[in-house]
Length: 131
Image: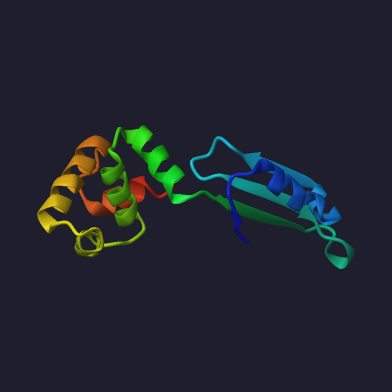
């Protein structure tokens, strides 16, 4: 289940709709990826067991780009490229989609590497896994 937006009230309303979800709720507003953890007991024959549900709160692309840019002092174009790579995209696809040359993408990617400390795209993907 994905909840669009970062509205705390929307999450609280979701929890309030179900008695079963009131056992334990924790919001993670400080995390890089915003999430809600819900832990509840199970009734009946399985009373000694529990259920954990973690709901990631999706944020819009602009907020994601801005947060990444602030974290590593990236320009908007560099942050957009970094997220494209982190999400599994290729530099060739990015160049084609943005209408820019591969050389421009390579230059931007080098700036991303310099600012993040990553040396390869695989390192960048690992580094940005929580963005």
